[in-house]
Structure formats: C-alpha cells, structure tokens
Image (cartoon, rainbow, N blue to C red; front, side):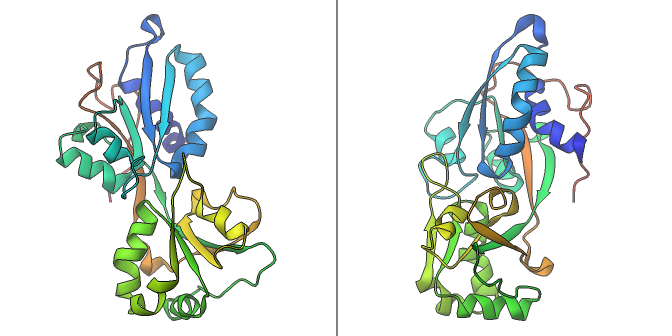
Length: 246
C-alpha cells in the first residue's frame, strides 16, 4: 500500500529528468487523492528540486473546474491524478498517454450523517434501499461517485423515482466543498462520496461504505498527458511498480 501511495507523487517523476535539471511540473488532481498528494508533495519537491504547480478539480462531471473540461479548453498539465475510468477516457481521446497510466489505489463510496444523528442501516442492499427511500434529503458529489449514484445506482435499485426529487448535487473543490460539509451543516440528511473525501471533514459521522455488490470498482490513477514537455521513460525504469490491473 505504501508503494501505491508513493506512486501518487512518484508518477510525476516520469515527466522530467532528475534534480540536475529541476522543472515546474503541472499537476491536475481530483479531490479523492488530494490529501495523500498534499502530504507527499513537499517531500517530493525537496528530494528532486522540481516544483509542483497543482490545479484541483473533479475527475468528471459538468463543472467548469472538472479536469477533462480544463484540458479540453486548453489548460496545460503534465500529469493528471484522477478517477481511473476518467483517465481511460482521456486516453481514448488522445489527451493522456495510455501506456503511462499508473493505478494508485482502489476507492469505495461511503456515506455520512451529521454528527450526533442516528446511523442508518446500510449493511445490505435491501437495508440500503430502505435508507435511501426513508431519507428526507440526499447529497452527492458532482464527480465520479455522484455521477454513478445519480445515473446508474438509483435506477439499478429501482428507487430513482422516489429519491431523485430529494437529492442535491454538491459542487466540489476548488470552488466548492466536500459533500460531508453540507451534511455537517444539516442541509442534507445523508451524504455520499468517495471515502477519502468524507472521513476528514468535521461535524459528521461516517456510517460506512455502501454494500460491496453495489460498489462501482473505482480506482485512482496517475497518467502523463500528451502535452507533457518531456518524454517519459517507462514506469518500471522509473522504479515504480504499478498495481495489478483488475
């Protein structure tokens, strides 16, 4: 696991040479992996001499800050770190180099309630459905997890007609906020997002992950854009070990 976490910043080293020719490295990163990146980034800069120029945005969705939208309108990046499926889509569009993709970690969707509120039962598919139907209001992100819930999961469970009217899509960072912040203020009763984006927000109680059979199999991945200023060596030559593909 440590090797996977290290790769979140280590993939950046694929773009540029060693410390003898320090460079600015432009990174676009989604919220789900940002905390790990923020912790490791300063050590990477000290060790290599490279300076990380970081832009945050959702992995997908209709936000003008979403990474695919930023790249489409000509914003520049050397490396992207985002949802693995979104990285694959960028590769199909020729925006990132498919052979540069490094799987960093698996990610699950979780649920929170406001601190002090009772924890609903989401331990089984049927219990999860009952919780959705009973909730007064539901918050979800404007990125990968929210897109999955609103376009796929609610319909798959047969509850879309019952829950859609009481849902709220929450605009994420950098201009927005995590779903959990909206739950903490009591503006929605339950909130869903990838676990890494929920558990560090004060004022909420983490209920747990949604049932395993409903998880979409999200991952976080790093990839080098086709606009990167330096040609990259292969992943293994850079000393990184990609996680096994599923």
